[in-house]
Image 1 (cartoon, helix red, strand yellow):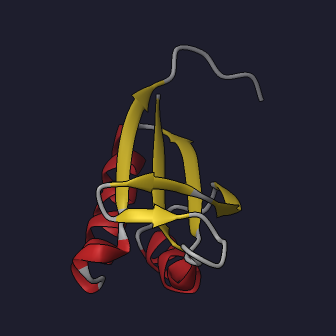
Image 2 (cartoon, rainbow, N blue to C red):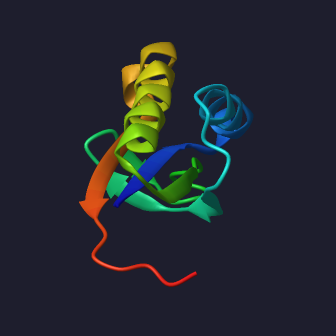
Length: 97
C-alpha cells in the first residue's frame, strides 16, 4: 500500500476533487486549510501572504496510486507554476481500518 499526499491552492479544491473522482479515486481525506512555505513562496493565510493551500491524502494500492498521481499531474498542467501543486508517495507498512 501507498499513501499519496498532495498539496494544491485552496482555490483549486473543486477542480482537484473533480479530477480525483474522474480518475476513479473515491476514498481520500482532505485537510481544508494548510499553510507553509516552499519553492513557490509563502502561503500563510495572513495579510502579508494571504494565500492558503489544501492537503489531500489517500492510502491506496498501486493501481489507485497511479490514478491519483495522474489526477495531480493533470492539475499541475492546468495551474500556473507559482500556484504550488505537488504530491509525494509514501510507503504504508500497516493500516488498521
